[in-house]
Image (tube, rainbow over all chains, first blue to last red; front, side, top):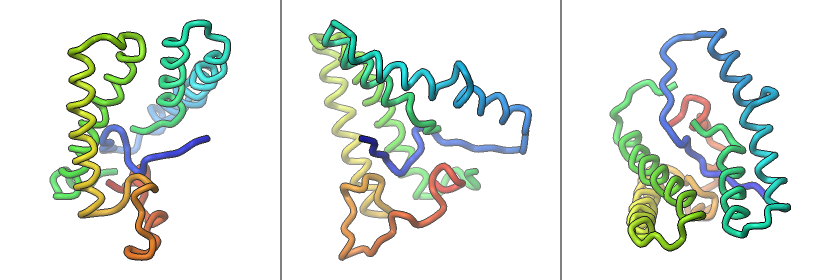
Length: 70
Length: 89
């Protein structure tokens, strides 16, 4: 289940168009070692984590990493 | 893209963002340090501030959580643009 808050976590103020930087940021988000892939690893590995507190931590981190929120 | 930094709406949103940031980080810490009394007080303090800031923003501007929508009273504004990630606040 997914739910969202209609807000950014941090204010963004883009001052100029910069496709090169945008490409790097997009790769950091959706690329092979990006946030999206990491979030899915957190959320699937939580099921085999033997320590309850870390299960909770993985759930919370995976949730935060799932969405680019500024 | 945020055009001006100092509108009342943006100031109100900054309060939501800063309190929420503190709550998010304190939650992750407490997951593995559940007996840290200082951290628990910190969490409760900023969680209260966050709720206040959310209520203030939602009362003056627009809903942030869909839980807080009053559709009959305010109409359906949830999908009004611009979204925060598309040049909105």
